[in-house]
Length: 163
Length: 210
Image (cartoon, rainbow over all chains, first blue to last red; front, side, top):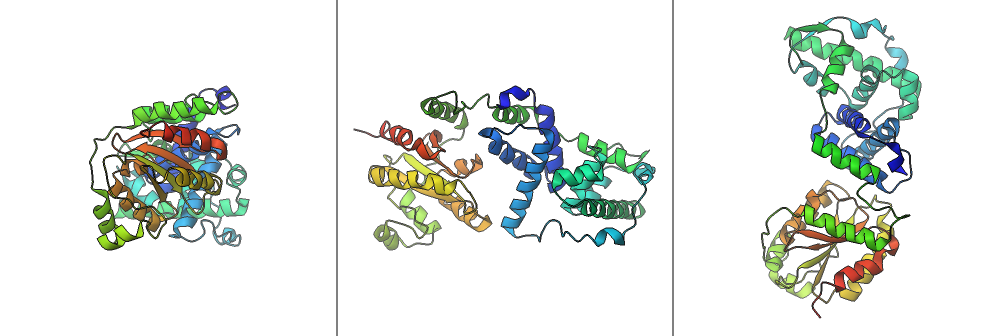
């Protein structure tokens, strides 16, 4: 039973942040977490951070498909992974001068799936394989999204700094 | 984000996301729900206790003041029906019963529906059976369809007209039937399992005048 799992507040906060990475909208992120929690209320599933993340991702994709406002979340075009050279991990730590709100605006300009893998890599510090396992996407797709997301994010950040 | 900080992208992202949190009250509410602290479990408590729980929760949920809206003509206007159509049809195109507004019509049985909801077909027979039994006895039976944005907007209009918009704001899940007192804006009972029908019927009959 879920009562045996102790305090899950920290996991919920992480779930909310992951939902925020997907939606880039606080209210929608909270709604996603709420809906996922409701789905677990009568379930016997053990609730962990990763189970929450996967459920949030699945629900987010379901909602996108229902609204038909966007095409398939992940194109599963594995060839894309070869078109962008893999960046060195050192790029994450390359000094970057940012002002208030710059990152928020730049994150708004990249795709939800790119934000999601960037969040999982940078904040949750998961490897590409772990992200692939968690999101049930091919590893090459994760690598591609991560590379493209980082390139686009940096470009948008530099654009704002230059502007 | 602190301006002027020269760090790597990873550190900026961490700070950005870790500064975001659910409000404590909201977090505790979700946490209690997730742990099942507040909802009696099917395996250990009777369904009657569960029903009582929902009645208890409803007292907390009711927070808005009643705005009485004359139902029949208001609903007709919002639904694009003439008053003659409204009086004659008794039932809207979406299947909802249209009955004249009256102070006695306080009870509304609301089916939360979506085409994509797996549980909805399981719960629908309860709704149909109870509507057959109680539909003529001052209970309004309404389906709020949230399948997509268009149907959700229609449901919002209908809910507005009935003075039960607050139920949509509660963001109840689909695949349930809620019995609400629209005067008090309270949820009186919720049927969420196929065999909740008898208790739900009891919750209605207890509140009907003899």
